[in-house]
Length: 344
Image 1 (cartoon, rainbow, N blue to C red):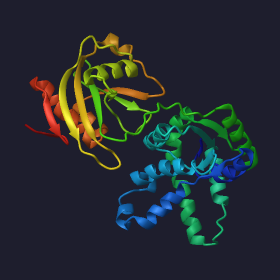
Image 2 (image 1 turned 135 degrees about the vertical axis):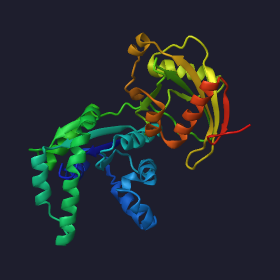
Image 3 (image 1 turned 90 degrees about the vertical axis):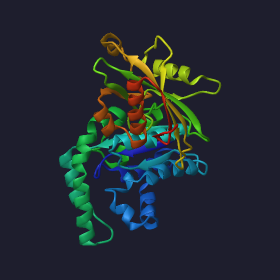
Image 4 (image 1 turned 180 degrees about the vertical axis):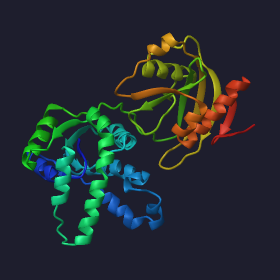
Protein backbone atom coordinates (compact mmCIF):
# COMPACT_ATOMS: atom_id res chain seq x y z
CA UNK A 1 0.00 0.00 0.00
CA UNK A 2 1.00 3.62 -0.58
CA UNK A 3 -0.21 6.43 1.68
CA UNK A 4 0.11 9.47 -0.58
CA UNK A 5 0.24 12.66 1.49
CA UNK A 6 -0.75 15.42 -0.91
CA UNK A 7 -0.91 19.15 -0.34
CA UNK A 8 1.02 22.26 -1.20
CA UNK A 9 4.15 23.64 0.47
CA UNK A 10 3.51 24.53 4.10
CA UNK A 11 0.75 21.96 4.65
CA UNK A 12 3.06 19.84 6.81
CA UNK A 13 3.57 16.79 4.59
CA UNK A 14 7.21 16.10 5.45
CA UNK A 15 6.93 16.51 9.22
CA UNK A 16 3.69 14.53 9.35
CA UNK A 17 5.21 11.74 7.25
CA UNK A 18 8.02 11.30 9.78
CA UNK A 19 5.47 10.99 12.57
CA UNK A 20 3.29 8.57 10.60
CA UNK A 21 6.24 6.16 10.44
CA UNK A 22 5.90 5.68 14.22
CA UNK A 23 2.15 5.04 14.04
CA UNK A 24 1.92 2.56 11.16
CA UNK A 25 4.04 -0.55 11.81
CA UNK A 26 6.26 -1.61 8.94
CA UNK A 27 5.88 1.72 7.12
CA UNK A 28 8.74 3.22 5.09
CA UNK A 29 9.30 6.76 3.86
CA UNK A 30 9.21 6.98 0.06
CA UNK A 31 10.16 10.37 -1.39
CA UNK A 32 9.72 10.58 -5.21
CA UNK A 33 11.48 13.95 -5.15
CA UNK A 34 14.74 11.99 -4.96
CA UNK A 35 13.89 10.48 -8.35
CA UNK A 36 13.56 13.97 -9.78
CA UNK A 37 16.96 14.89 -8.37
CA UNK A 38 18.44 11.76 -9.92
CA UNK A 39 16.96 12.51 -13.33
CA UNK A 40 18.36 16.03 -13.14
CA UNK A 41 21.82 14.49 -12.82
CA UNK A 42 21.31 11.90 -15.56
CA UNK A 43 19.27 13.65 -18.25
CA UNK A 44 20.72 16.33 -20.55
CA UNK A 45 20.20 19.84 -19.19
CA UNK A 46 18.37 20.71 -22.42
CA UNK A 47 15.63 18.22 -21.52
CA UNK A 48 14.92 20.03 -18.26
CA UNK A 49 14.76 23.34 -20.11
CA UNK A 50 11.80 21.92 -22.04
CA UNK A 51 9.65 21.36 -18.93
CA UNK A 52 8.50 23.52 -16.02
CA UNK A 53 8.87 20.77 -13.41
CA UNK A 54 10.36 17.29 -13.24
CA UNK A 55 6.80 15.96 -12.79
CA UNK A 56 6.29 16.88 -16.46
CA UNK A 57 8.81 14.19 -17.41
CA UNK A 58 7.11 10.91 -18.42
CA UNK A 59 10.22 9.13 -17.15
CA UNK A 60 9.69 10.54 -13.63
CA UNK A 61 6.06 9.46 -13.50
CA UNK A 62 6.95 5.96 -14.63
CA UNK A 63 9.85 5.74 -12.19
CA UNK A 64 7.53 6.70 -9.32
CA UNK A 65 5.46 3.58 -10.02
CA UNK A 66 8.36 1.24 -10.81
CA UNK A 67 10.32 2.30 -7.73
CA UNK A 68 7.29 1.89 -5.47
CA UNK A 69 6.74 -1.63 -6.80
CA UNK A 70 10.42 -2.44 -6.28
CA UNK A 71 10.44 -1.07 -2.72
CA UNK A 72 7.42 -3.16 -1.79
CA UNK A 73 9.40 -6.28 -2.63
CA UNK A 74 11.92 -5.24 0.04
CA UNK A 75 9.73 -3.82 2.83
CA UNK A 76 6.29 -4.80 4.17
CA UNK A 77 4.78 -1.36 3.61
CA UNK A 78 2.93 0.85 3.60
CA UNK A 79 5.04 3.42 1.79
CA UNK A 80 4.50 6.92 3.18
CA UNK A 81 4.82 9.36 0.29
CA UNK A 82 4.80 13.11 1.04
CA UNK A 83 4.50 14.53 -2.47
CA UNK A 84 2.61 17.45 -3.95
CA UNK A 85 0.57 16.27 -6.94
CA UNK A 86 -1.69 18.99 -8.35
CA UNK A 87 -2.25 17.93 -11.96
CA UNK A 88 -5.14 15.52 -12.21
CA UNK A 89 -3.84 13.85 -15.36
CA UNK A 90 -0.60 13.00 -13.55
CA UNK A 91 -2.59 11.62 -10.63
CA UNK A 92 -4.50 9.44 -13.12
CA UNK A 93 -1.33 8.15 -14.71
CA UNK A 94 0.50 7.38 -11.46
CA UNK A 95 -2.40 6.02 -9.41
CA UNK A 96 -3.77 4.11 -12.40
CA UNK A 97 -0.40 2.46 -13.00
CA UNK A 98 -0.17 1.57 -9.31
CA UNK A 99 -3.64 0.02 -9.51
CA UNK A 100 -2.48 -2.01 -12.52
CA UNK A 101 0.32 -3.36 -10.30
CA UNK A 102 -2.29 -4.22 -7.64
CA UNK A 103 -0.79 -1.62 -5.28
CA UNK A 104 -3.60 0.09 -3.33
CA UNK A 105 -3.37 3.83 -2.69
CA UNK A 106 -4.71 5.89 0.21
CA UNK A 107 -4.88 9.48 -1.00
CA UNK A 108 -4.80 11.96 1.92
CA UNK A 109 -4.84 15.72 1.39
CA UNK A 110 -3.19 17.80 4.11
CA UNK A 111 -4.89 21.17 3.82
CA UNK A 112 -4.49 24.54 5.51
CA UNK A 113 -5.92 27.96 4.75
CA UNK A 114 -3.80 30.23 2.55
CA UNK A 115 -2.99 32.72 5.33
CA UNK A 116 -1.56 29.90 7.45
CA UNK A 117 0.34 28.47 4.48
CA UNK A 118 1.92 31.86 3.83
CA UNK A 119 2.94 32.19 7.49
CA UNK A 120 4.54 28.74 7.49
CA UNK A 121 6.41 29.41 4.24
CA UNK A 122 7.73 32.73 5.62
CA UNK A 123 8.88 31.07 8.86
CA UNK A 124 10.44 28.03 7.21
CA UNK A 125 14.07 27.55 8.17
CA UNK A 126 16.58 26.07 5.75
CA UNK A 127 19.49 24.10 7.29
CA UNK A 128 22.00 25.36 4.73
CA UNK A 129 21.94 28.92 5.99
CA UNK A 130 22.13 30.11 2.37
CA UNK A 131 19.96 33.24 2.33
CA UNK A 132 19.73 33.36 -1.46
CA UNK A 133 18.72 29.70 -1.71
CA UNK A 134 16.18 30.20 1.09
CA UNK A 135 14.63 33.14 -0.76
CA UNK A 136 14.45 31.11 -3.96
CA UNK A 137 12.68 28.22 -2.18
CA UNK A 138 10.26 30.66 -0.55
CA UNK A 139 9.40 32.21 -3.93
CA UNK A 140 8.94 28.73 -5.39
CA UNK A 141 6.63 27.73 -2.52
CA UNK A 142 4.53 30.88 -2.76
CA UNK A 143 4.21 30.47 -6.54
CA UNK A 144 2.51 27.10 -5.98
CA UNK A 145 -0.31 28.50 -3.84
CA UNK A 146 -2.34 29.62 -6.86
CA UNK A 147 -2.10 26.25 -8.70
CA UNK A 148 -3.01 24.55 -5.42
CA UNK A 149 -6.13 26.70 -5.06
CA UNK A 150 -7.06 25.82 -8.64
CA UNK A 151 -6.66 22.10 -7.94
CA UNK A 152 -8.63 22.07 -4.68
CA UNK A 153 -11.95 21.19 -6.28
CA UNK A 154 -10.73 17.85 -7.65
CA UNK A 155 -8.37 17.18 -4.75
CA UNK A 156 -11.12 17.45 -2.13
CA UNK A 157 -13.34 15.21 -4.22
CA UNK A 158 -10.63 12.59 -4.66
CA UNK A 159 -8.75 12.53 -1.36
CA UNK A 160 -9.53 12.23 2.35
CA UNK A 161 -8.94 15.74 3.74
CA UNK A 162 -7.10 16.45 6.99
CA UNK A 163 -7.11 20.14 7.96
CA UNK A 164 -3.69 20.83 9.49
CA UNK A 165 -4.32 24.52 10.22
CA UNK A 166 -4.27 24.05 14.00
CA UNK A 167 -2.67 20.62 14.34
CA UNK A 168 0.83 19.64 15.42
CA UNK A 169 2.71 17.21 13.16
CA UNK A 170 1.97 14.41 15.65
CA UNK A 171 -1.75 15.24 15.69
CA UNK A 172 -1.78 15.35 11.89
CA UNK A 173 -0.04 11.97 11.74
CA UNK A 174 -2.59 10.50 14.15
CA UNK A 175 -5.43 11.67 11.89
CA UNK A 176 -3.66 10.18 8.86
CA UNK A 177 -3.05 6.85 10.60
CA UNK A 178 -6.68 6.70 11.72
CA UNK A 179 -7.84 7.41 8.16
CA UNK A 180 -5.62 4.68 6.75
CA UNK A 181 -6.87 2.11 9.26
CA UNK A 182 -10.49 2.96 8.43
CA UNK A 183 -9.91 2.74 4.67
CA UNK A 184 -10.51 6.45 4.05
CA UNK A 185 -8.94 7.94 0.93
CA UNK A 186 -9.03 4.64 -0.97
CA UNK A 187 -8.74 5.25 -4.71
CA UNK A 188 -11.18 2.86 -6.37
CA UNK A 189 -9.53 2.96 -9.79
CA UNK A 190 -10.23 0.17 -12.23
CA UNK A 191 -7.27 -2.23 -12.27
CA UNK A 192 -6.13 -2.53 -15.87
CA UNK A 193 -3.13 -4.87 -16.04
CA UNK A 194 -0.12 -3.50 -17.89
CA UNK A 195 0.37 -5.28 -21.23
CA UNK A 196 3.26 -7.70 -21.61
CA UNK A 197 2.99 -8.02 -25.40
CA UNK A 198 1.20 -6.44 -28.37
CA UNK A 199 -2.51 -5.93 -27.71
CA UNK A 200 -5.70 -5.76 -29.77
CA UNK A 201 -8.03 -2.93 -28.76
CA UNK A 202 -11.47 -1.91 -30.04
CA UNK A 203 -12.91 1.59 -29.70
CA UNK A 204 -16.38 2.78 -30.66
CA UNK A 205 -17.21 6.27 -31.93
CA UNK A 206 -20.61 7.55 -30.81
CA UNK A 207 -22.15 10.76 -32.16
CA UNK A 208 -24.86 13.25 -31.20
CA UNK A 209 -27.31 14.90 -33.62
CA UNK A 210 -24.72 17.63 -34.35
CA UNK A 211 -22.24 14.98 -35.50
CA UNK A 212 -19.97 15.62 -32.53
CA UNK A 213 -18.04 12.61 -31.29
CA UNK A 214 -18.12 11.27 -27.73
CA UNK A 215 -14.86 11.24 -25.75
CA UNK A 216 -14.42 9.85 -22.24
CA UNK A 217 -11.94 10.76 -19.49
CA UNK A 218 -10.62 7.58 -17.78
CA UNK A 219 -9.61 7.70 -14.11
CA UNK A 220 -6.82 5.17 -14.59
CA UNK A 221 -4.74 6.94 -17.24
CA UNK A 222 -3.99 10.41 -18.46
CA UNK A 223 -5.82 12.02 -21.37
CA UNK A 224 -9.15 11.69 -23.15
CA UNK A 225 -10.02 8.50 -24.99
CA UNK A 226 -12.71 6.77 -27.06
CA UNK A 227 -15.12 4.36 -25.36
CA UNK A 228 -13.69 0.85 -25.72
CA UNK A 229 -10.87 -1.30 -24.46
CA UNK A 230 -8.71 -4.38 -24.84
CA UNK A 231 -10.18 -7.33 -26.71
CA UNK A 232 -10.22 -10.39 -24.46
CA UNK A 233 -8.79 -13.76 -25.53
CA UNK A 234 -11.19 -15.54 -27.93
CA UNK A 235 -13.43 -12.45 -28.25
CA UNK A 236 -14.46 -10.87 -31.55
CA UNK A 237 -13.20 -7.24 -31.75
CA UNK A 238 -16.61 -5.82 -32.68
CA UNK A 239 -18.21 -7.63 -29.77
CA UNK A 240 -15.51 -6.28 -27.45
CA UNK A 241 -16.35 -2.72 -28.50
CA UNK A 242 -20.05 -3.30 -27.86
CA UNK A 243 -19.28 -4.88 -24.47
CA UNK A 244 -17.03 -2.02 -23.39
CA UNK A 245 -19.62 0.62 -24.35
CA UNK A 246 -22.23 -1.21 -22.27
CA UNK A 247 -19.88 -1.58 -19.30
CA UNK A 248 -18.51 1.95 -19.40
CA UNK A 249 -21.58 3.97 -20.35
CA UNK A 250 -24.61 1.72 -19.89
CA UNK A 251 -25.45 1.91 -23.61
CA UNK A 252 -26.62 -1.23 -25.39
CA UNK A 253 -25.87 -0.84 -29.08
CA UNK A 254 -28.72 -2.25 -31.22
CA UNK A 255 -26.41 -3.68 -33.89
CA UNK A 256 -22.84 -4.66 -34.54
CA UNK A 257 -20.82 -1.51 -35.23
CA UNK A 258 -19.29 -0.83 -38.65
CA UNK A 259 -15.48 -0.84 -38.90
CA UNK A 260 -13.97 2.54 -39.72
CA UNK A 261 -10.24 2.16 -39.14
CA UNK A 262 -7.71 -0.58 -38.47
CA UNK A 263 -4.48 0.98 -37.26
CA UNK A 264 -1.23 -0.79 -36.44
CA UNK A 265 0.33 1.12 -33.54
CA UNK A 266 4.11 0.87 -33.51
CA UNK A 267 5.75 -0.18 -30.22
CA UNK A 268 7.09 2.77 -28.27
CA UNK A 269 8.98 1.45 -25.23
CA UNK A 270 7.81 0.87 -22.60
CA UNK A 271 4.58 0.35 -24.62
CA UNK A 272 4.17 -2.70 -26.86
CA UNK A 273 1.79 -1.31 -29.48
CA UNK A 274 -0.53 -3.56 -31.44
CA UNK A 275 -3.71 -3.32 -33.51
CA UNK A 276 -6.27 -0.60 -32.79
CA UNK A 277 -9.74 -0.76 -34.35
CA UNK A 278 -12.30 2.04 -34.38
CA UNK A 279 -15.98 1.32 -35.09
CA UNK A 280 -18.95 3.52 -35.91
CA UNK A 281 -21.48 3.13 -33.11
CA UNK A 282 -23.96 5.49 -34.75
CA UNK A 283 -25.87 8.52 -33.51
CA UNK A 284 -27.33 8.65 -30.00
CA UNK A 285 -30.70 10.29 -29.41
CA UNK A 286 -31.08 12.94 -26.70
CA UNK A 287 -33.00 10.41 -24.62
CA UNK A 288 -30.15 7.88 -24.71
CA UNK A 289 -27.57 10.59 -24.01
CA UNK A 290 -29.50 11.64 -20.90
CA UNK A 291 -29.16 8.08 -19.57
CA UNK A 292 -25.38 7.83 -19.97
CA UNK A 293 -23.79 6.31 -16.88
CA UNK A 294 -20.44 7.29 -15.42
CA UNK A 295 -18.75 4.56 -13.32
CA UNK A 296 -16.55 6.38 -10.77
CA UNK A 297 -13.93 3.64 -10.73
CA UNK A 298 -13.35 3.85 -14.48
CA UNK A 299 -14.54 7.15 -16.00
CA UNK A 300 -14.53 10.66 -14.57
CA UNK A 301 -16.25 12.53 -17.37
CA UNK A 302 -17.63 12.36 -20.91
CA UNK A 303 -18.09 15.02 -23.55
CA UNK A 304 -19.31 15.43 -27.13
CA UNK A 305 -16.75 17.44 -29.11
CA UNK A 306 -16.18 18.74 -32.61
CA UNK A 307 -13.24 17.52 -34.68
CA UNK A 308 -11.34 20.74 -33.91
CA UNK A 309 -11.96 20.35 -30.16
CA UNK A 310 -10.86 16.72 -30.29
CA UNK A 311 -7.54 17.76 -31.82
CA UNK A 312 -6.81 19.88 -28.74
CA UNK A 313 -7.89 17.18 -26.28
CA UNK A 314 -6.43 13.96 -27.68
CA UNK A 315 -2.78 12.90 -27.76
CA UNK A 316 -1.39 12.96 -31.33
CA UNK A 317 -1.63 9.20 -31.93
CA UNK A 318 -5.32 9.08 -30.93
CA UNK A 319 -6.15 12.29 -32.74
CA UNK A 320 -4.64 10.99 -35.98
CA UNK A 321 -6.64 7.77 -35.66
CA UNK A 322 -9.85 9.73 -35.09
CA UNK A 323 -9.16 12.04 -38.02
CA UNK A 324 -8.91 9.14 -40.46
CA UNK A 325 -11.88 7.38 -38.87
CA UNK A 326 -14.03 10.44 -39.54
CA UNK A 327 -12.84 10.49 -43.17
CA UNK A 328 -13.68 6.79 -43.50
CA UNK A 329 -17.16 7.48 -42.08
CA UNK A 330 -17.73 10.21 -44.65
CA UNK A 331 -16.61 7.95 -47.52
CA UNK A 332 -18.39 4.84 -46.30
CA UNK A 333 -15.22 2.79 -46.69
CA UNK A 334 -12.90 1.54 -43.91
CA UNK A 335 -9.23 2.51 -43.94
CA UNK A 336 -6.15 0.44 -43.15
CA UNK A 337 -3.48 2.45 -41.29
CA UNK A 338 0.05 1.69 -40.23
CA UNK A 339 1.27 3.98 -37.44
CA UNK A 340 -1.54 6.39 -38.35
CA UNK A 341 -0.78 6.53 -42.09
CA UNK A 342 -3.20 5.02 -44.68
CA UNK A 343 -1.73 2.14 -46.68
CA UNK A 344 -2.99 0.05 -49.59
